[in-house]
Image 1 (cartoon, rainbow, N blue to C red):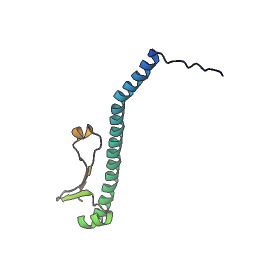
Image 2: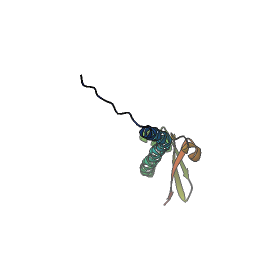
Image 3: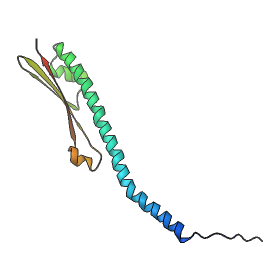
Image 4: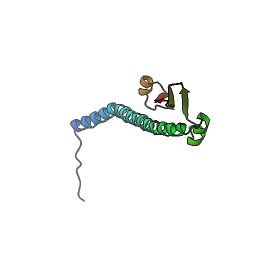
Length: 125
């Protein structure tokens, strides 16, 4: 019968494994906060682009003499707030949407839910 001797791990390598675990536990929450923050800012920029595109469609429909209610129905603006203010010399169109922030610390800075708003002013002819 052949006996196999197992090498014992020395104290130094056990300390290194413990140190790696502690470093991982310290870095993980910071990494998760950064990751969720990138997701939130991506969501904000994506919705900003959607609002910019939608307000261009609203301007086109409004130039065709459609009312505010007809525009809301046609573009299905249920989760957005549309306001059209008309004056004698100009027309101001405002479109707003609230975005839920998921990052724990970021919601204190940006106010949860974050209100995103796009405005256009058009001179009447």
